[in-house]
Length: 206
Ligand code: ADP
Image (cartoon, rainbow, N blue to C red; front, top):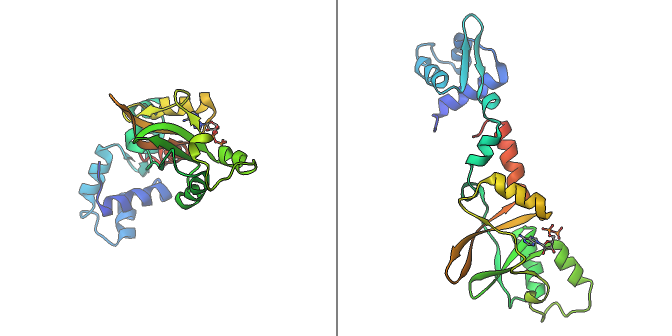
């Protein structure tokens, strides 16, 4: 649900100063009590705020949302990041440059537009201290390939994505769409996404 700027201001204020009376909220906003009456009613009705007679308003959302159910209901599609995909023929050197420019921990590799591999920072470090010519050797020579790739679908839950990342001890999952010709990469889901979700959950974002 979208709140107005004033309602968000009230939520922030209550979180900082709870419990706080309606009169005090109005005074801090420089408004009359009757002006914010509807805002307060809506925030109580939607269970963002609680109201105790003679005590005042308090924040309740964060306490009620932090559940496993939330993680099962959130889909990867809604929380994923933009993927960085490069062709198998790209040189190892160009992939290393790409990882810096795009500021990512892994790059997904494609062949004819379909997912064929994943390359991580350590894969690149390993090959960089070896004897291969980085300028001319294609990335296809040092990536983890299909069928060993762990992937996730856009409609899968973020809980399943976190379980896969943990079980396989990897940093990132390509989010894929299955087509008759192969896997199309539509996103990137990483440990960073999970960290962000936890931080947002704790501050009552969902
Ligand atoms: P790093 O190697 O930088 O610690 P990761 O833990 O993500 O990063 O990668 C560990 C190994 O697993 C690497 O060899 C990498 O190619 C491979 N890998 C990374 N992501 C996947 C994935 N989604 N599916 C299969 N293998 C992966």
